[in-house]
Length: 190
Length: 190
DNA sequence: GAGATATAATTAGGTGCCTAACTATATAAG
DNA sequence: CTTATATAGTTAGGCACCTAATTATATCTC
Image 1 (spheres, chains in turn blue, orange, yellow, purple):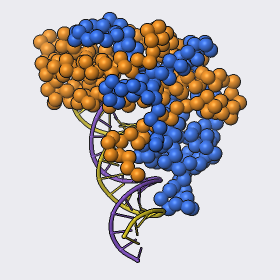
Image 2: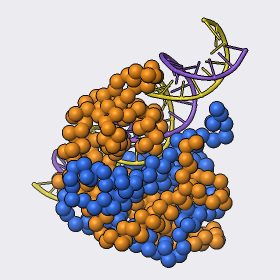
Image 3: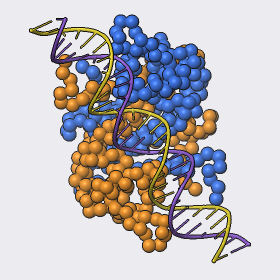
Image 4: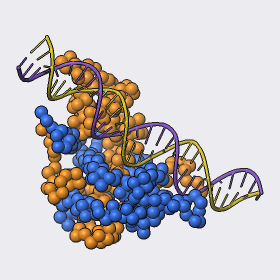
């Protein structure tokens, strides 16, 4: 029984949560909770995990990870030159993570580090010509695939989806914040 | 300038992708791509990452990770007794990952392993009384938080969101599959 | 029954991201 | 000027999940 001859799509399982599952869980403990709300939350979690995994596969085709691509793209969006701390803020990750991303990108020749003149603690990150070339070469396929991903939605549906997703995203703070507190969207820095 | 006195919400950054960003990227390479489609894809990625992170914080309150909670919940849904391979399939992760999850859950006394009678290779995983108690105790807060997460959507909007999310989720295969192929949703096992 | 092959679970090692601790530089207060 | 404190970046170590290789048992074929 051959099955890992071409690719290994052995465990590409979806494991989609169903409404009856949600109902059963809630009923088990006699909770006064809307089963559909739980279903939405569960599905979004499953979708997020699936997308994260797919994203890594996508970028690995170009020798990148999701984080390293995002760093390169952000550099490109800022004239090819940024401080690690700026990158961390733009990407929404810690400076430690940025250090790791830069290490590998520098090893691969896609960015380089250079000391700044003003502040001896800072080290500017620069997009190399090779890095810019990498972005240029992958752009057509990258964006085509992203576009295809939402291809099952028409224009109007995309707007609606954006709106709803935005509100659910604000609600995510309900997982991390205090119980009973209202979601407050952005927790801006300062 | 105190800021890490209570909690450390220093890097709780959203880094929300904007439409102008998407436009700029597409224009840079003269691609024939709908900027809004890219925006939807980018936002969903950001939301997925944020939710994944929030989920880990949420479950760490109960001494669990997202994966370990899902394993316990799946056990509960199957009379408290499953094979590792069944768990892997239900959770959509590899058997190697399941082994790791069980290791820690067993160490913490929430599940136990037992050899099966029929097949000497199999080892049944059993939800212990302590594991069941853990689920029972965390259920109210867990489900309340999940419900709160989608609290900004009314009933109708939840239905619409589920529908749209489902279609986008099917589209995720556009990232991993062949270029130009139609999304086909589930890749069932067999 | 012996040898090849399949399967269940585990182990070994890798990636991506995290937090906490550290180093080096800068700045403010006495 | 010296000492305390803040900040930029890095290092060290951890967790979740992965793939590939390994071990042990089962099954199929001769």
